[in-house]
Image (cartoon, rainbow, N blue to C red; front, side, top):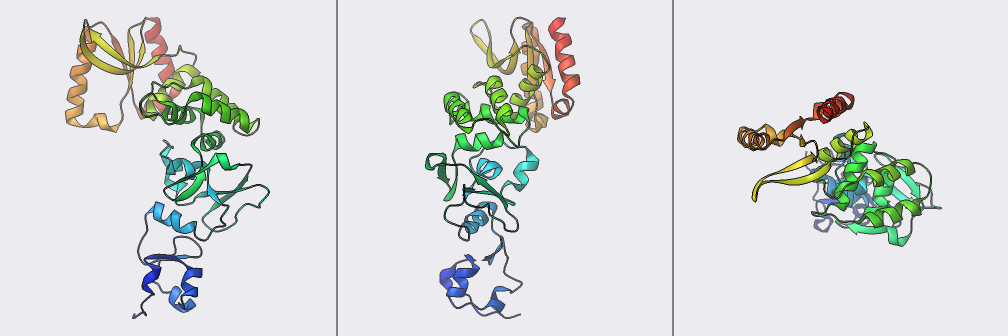
Length: 294
């Protein structure tokens, strides 16, 4: 079906209000070839999640901001897959109190006590700062993954926040939903962790009553570097390593086998953890406990 050309200045993504001001009729805006990423918006092509979110903010009040999992996704925090999947497609949008939360399709609205110093901008989108986003995640994430987010933020390699800045944000947020998780996350975090699954594994071991292992330790034979291991119980010479999908390739599997054979020859024992073990933490903890006691 033939459609009249849209004004060139609208580009390939625009708001309905802007199009109407440019003389585009309501009927033209209902054309089937136009997509509606969010209520009140149109696009001539399928937008990626970030572009769609940027467009959404054109129809939101100027005081609105992304928060919760949406801000965390924008800031590159390691969210669980199920939460990451909807973080941008059904964004969490906040407004400062005493404004009423936003009510519109495809959006989760919140009204929060925020100040200017707890708001920033990422990729052209107004959102909560790292520390304030971390505070909000305490109310929605399970403890092991919250520790993983905390480790990610304070990591020695590429970290973007200090423990003190998170502790200050925790105190400023006060008691209430998520405060217990935040306190436990601060007690369990480590700046040595280098992947979310490592952090979750370590947290499950500690919550299971085991000692806190050292994280990402370099192993040497005399002065020769042998390996960097995820977790180490040094006195028991027990290594705990998490293997993700990356380790399932043939080349990586062969490399892992040679590396682990070298560690065993030096008198170390190894526990390899996978996602199935994280889904069954009681069995994992019991296995590591037996090896620690052996």
